[in-house]
Image (cartoon, rainbow, N blue to C red; front, side, top):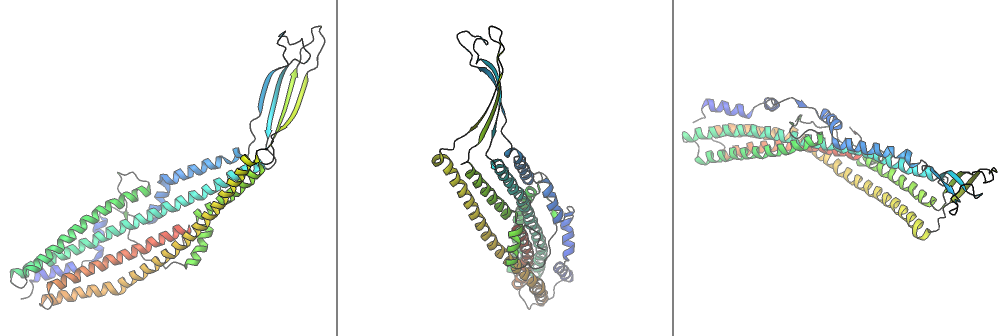
Length: 428
């Protein structure tokens, strides 16, 4: 006996349910937010970016003071005051004195101090851009993960509806003695598994939404945006080409180069400490008239003092050694980071290509064949040429392939996001 007509129609309708209807159902909760707009929101609102910019501004404000002179010293007092008479006119050398002194670093020291501060601010400026790129990458990854969860939920719900119709069909056939109880139980089990999978996806979605809100700089109580599902893009350039781009544009590498330049200036400054600084002092002394009324001329004094850098072994030598070690350390860090970037570029390029090919294979070959297999199995099941378990397995295979296709598309775009972060530029 064939299936009841109504059940057959419902089953076919469930299998051929248009994806657009399901997407519209998902989007009914609110409008989608394009990825570009999500990134723009993060760049405007993310507190990490604001903190990095404020830190860089603080470093920029340190440049001018680094090369400024020390404040001059103003002094006033009494010189050669006799303690016996406590008189300002008893002794010819007694005077009231006011003076001014200024410390002058050895030529070149001020410029080097300013250069050190300028290179530090430059490194932090690159650090701001690195923070911007990292937040952009985080937004893209969370956005794509959320899109995958939503798409997986949509596919699972669609598959659950199909399995529920399978269950109704099995129950109808079991009622008229054309199917076994095992068919009904198997269908019930698969429906329960889909329900459990939807529970897991709902939990995962909440976690990803929280991460996306964090990257966007939104308050925790605000709803996360609804993402648009991505599309496949062109394959990335060759890793060697990307490595050259990264060396020239990756902010992290540029920051390390600025830090090396800073360390070189700091080393030059440490070597300059072997040369003395100067201190110029000028004073004016006012003398009272003598006890007999005779006039005494006022006096001026001008002196130049220098410090003597004698403690080279215990003070200056270690400073030079420290500056040399810091410069060499930063150089090694740059080399290590360049090697890591080169390695990750190769890995992510391989991920881009692999997921691109996998998605194309799913789209052009695997999924069409799997869907045709389900349709063929359905037709054969209706005339008792295929058992119910085969029909269920074929339908579950379609679900796995659909999720596999969605995962490949998302992973392809996530790898592209990593490549853009590693290179520091939009490479597409």
